[in-house]
Amino acid sequence: MEADGETDDTRRRKAIEAEFKRLEESAMYSAQMQFEQTKQWRGVNLGLGLPASLLAAVAGTTALVESTGRVAAGILALASAGFGTILTTVNASHRMNQAAAAANAYLEIQTAARQAREIDLPTWPLDEARNALAELTARRDEQNKTAEPPNRRSYRRAKANIDAGGQSYVADESTPTTGQ
Image (cartoon, rainbow, N blue to C red):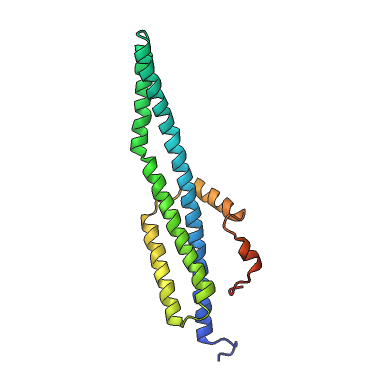
């Protein structure tokens, strides 16, 4: 025993617990930011895709119905092509799916870190706890490499969502945790 009443093992276990908490928090923010990115890309996809489709339909109808409306039909067709070109270049649908997949991967890491900290850490030998922490950290780091960096708007919206309780569970209100 040390003079302060804590052993090296106790201090190490507390340090591992603190790292699990940091990993959990990091994954929580990353997940929420990626979900916000998903919403933004879905909006871009709809905002460009719907007008492109509608303009193409109106242009085709105008060209077929009115012989004098060829200029209008041509302008509408060009506008539709412009929206379609931007949509293809931006690739909003792919980015939306990529952000959603990243968000779910971060949620998996967050859940695993919380479960390791709250359920397994108290009974794990220190080496096993450290290995679990290293594995989760590696998963998070790998996900960071593949996830698209979020913009400031996503960060602000994610933080507001978390601050408003978007990551809280009713079970947490009545269940004491080992780390508190």
